[in-house]
Amino acid sequence: MRVDEWLAIAGTSAPRAPVVESWDRARRGRLDPERTLAPTPLTAEEVRDHRARHPLAAAMPVLRELLGKDADEDSGVVVAVGDAAGRLLWVEGDPALVRRAEAMRFVPGADWSEHRVGTSAPGTALALDHGIQIAGAEHFALPVRDWSCTAMPVHDLRTHETVGVIDITGGPEVVAPHTLPLLAATAAAMERELLLARRAEPRRRMRQPVRAARLAVLGRDTAALTAGDAVLELSTRHAELMTLLAWHRTGLSAERLAELLHGRPDAVVTVRAEMVRLRHLLEGVAPALVPLARPYRLAVPVDLDARMVVGLLDRGAHRAALDAFAGEVLPASVAPGIEEIRQELAARMRESILESASVELLLAYADRVTADPAVLLTALQILPARSPRRAGVVARLEALEQRNDPQPSRA
Picture 1: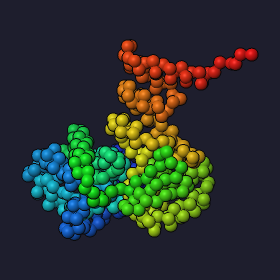
Picture 2 (picture 1 turned 180 degrees about the horizontal axis):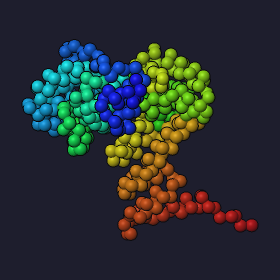
Picture 3 (picture 1 turned 60 degrees about the vertical axis):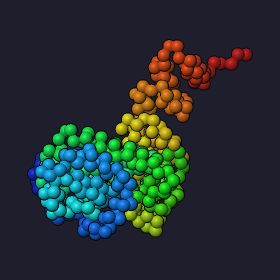
Picture 4 (picture 1 turned 45 degrees about the vertical axis):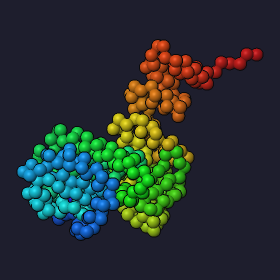
């Protein structure tokens, strides 16, 4: 179904770009808007086990404190919490609305990932790794278009991994302008609570949560892929492929992937052969991560450490972003697409650090990027006139100037 056909069914004529892109992903995944429903949920026993193993169980009191008063009886609001794969674990709120939501399988144990139900706030927030609001007819599945929802991913502040998603569902009021900041604040509070819970029990080994796979590429010529208990070292080419797919979450055509890997769109045959080898490798270790085709994309979210750094920068966590920045993305790679990611990340990091107006951050960043005088000049402007640290900054600037513009040797 083309987007214009879907617009006629949905009854809207001016969709937002993220919604159109999400619809297109659902269409390419061969979802039917008239028949799409979440798959059969887990059993009650499976849901209880899933909850017991999930780290966000420790943060549920925080969520109920912040959102519970807005989701009690007759509130017209349902609050849901899901894992990193889009599986709902808790669905609470207005009892009458909770019962109504059962008709569209918005229940604990149901899979509301984007590749299962199309456009919805929980699944699309996980697919994009940022908060989003989906109003009424913006949903891909017709059985859901009478509802509106706002969702926000939740991260582990230690590892920067996505551990889950929080969502409020109801009528048009749940996509009011104040709702997204409210969920962002709630997610941040839950992230802090999760961090405190881990610190409070340092000797007790926490059970492994259901979480997104992680791909580490910063400062590495190969990639480390962690999926559950399995850790797989990827070759440079497989690392490039997985990095591009994890960075471009909405998918890439064969021609675009060939251009990003080999610098020319006509290398499609080579790319297809490389994708076959990658699929064979993943099928035996992490079958859920086997890439889909048309376009090439990952079926489930993968936490790419480079994207995590960008997420921390977007949230203003500059110190955490700098700590997480272990180096350039696959520094030995010469693939054009990897070079683009490398340059974008470096530019985002530099811009954020310069705007932070923190001398400590500027100098810590300068320790890693010694050839950037603008960072040192900014630090010098911020430091008080009598600060003893100014002499060290001036000395570093002079050393840079001599390195970049050496005087001719005397005869």
